Length: 150
Image 1 (tube, rainbow, N blue to C red):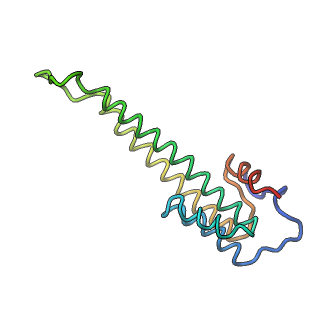
Image 2 (image 1 turned 120 degrees about the vertical axis):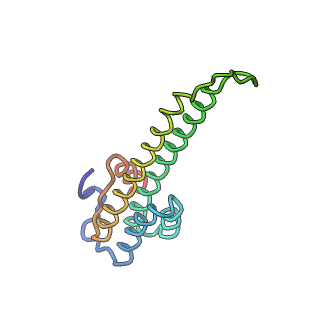
Image 3 (image 1 turned 90 degrees about the horizontal axis):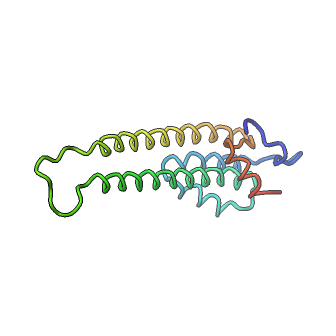
């Protein structure tokens, strides 16, 4: 969803500077505090649908990113354990495990891409929220709009 979420945007409702600031802060805080900052804002500013909408998007993204991160590390440890020789006996000419050689850079790459996406979403949507836009993340914005509702 790019731009404005027209069904969510109430006609004639003027946003306060405080609402815009807290909505922008939810996106900015997710870059440094992970899910904690947006959660605090979501729970403390429940009276504003605009703030709830923006804070919930940051929370949903962090939840998805956390699940991907945990899945990646779980896969890494499975690969690591699978590449170990069975039993306690170590063969005399053990080579460096190729699976580990492939998995480690792949895990690092996924982590860096996730970090870059988090930074991009945080900066871009912080600025949109500060301007008072009902802008939604791709896909996640629709979920947040449904959850926060009218």
